[in-house]
Length: 235
Ligand SMILES: [Zn+2]
Image 1 (spheres, rainbow, N blue to C red):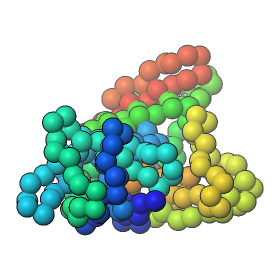
Image 2: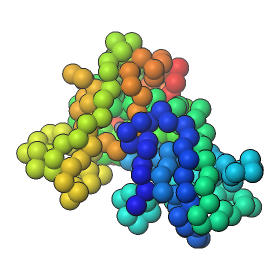
Image 3: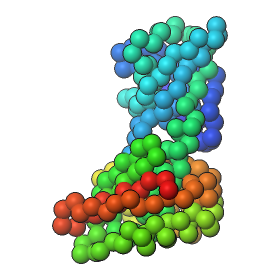
Image 4: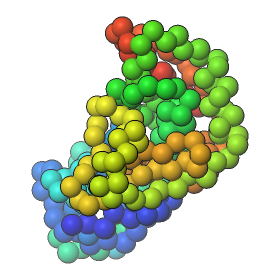
């Protein structure tokens, strides 16, 4: 079990940690700021800084077998740490911050477009979400305008928790058909953009929508009869 520091503070760039293990799957730490790939958001890259100042490059972070396990995948040729060694885990903050801004923007997109989300992907500087909107013609420019209005309004963005029971009573909160929120742990994490969007999400987000900056819908594609793929990028 590792302490997942990004869950309570997505703005943490580094932390001290002890190496718990290192095998072909990756390096495990007792605590980490590295977000592992999940919910459409890519895992963090960065370094593990050793006591002598040298670094172990981390190319990716992935989920382990248990919910609280993060595997730090070293770049090819990176040095191996010793179990028990103390390191400073540092994420590539510029990349993570762009991912946080784009990720939060997808929550706004869910508020602008009605219909269930059938898939999605966030990458550096751009993202896409697929919506199940039968017969609906989506207007690229109108969506861009609505998104930028929500961004400029600088809504507060707050994570909070809901019990499994309460979530079961409010099925309308789950927008994503392809990925169900992880229940069975007693509680599920919600992301609340006050008055705009509320849905289960375990990703990393910024604190105020104005941090996203201007965005634009670059393309809307038809993916099947009912499926519309909305592509976004920073303007
Ligand atoms: Zn989210």
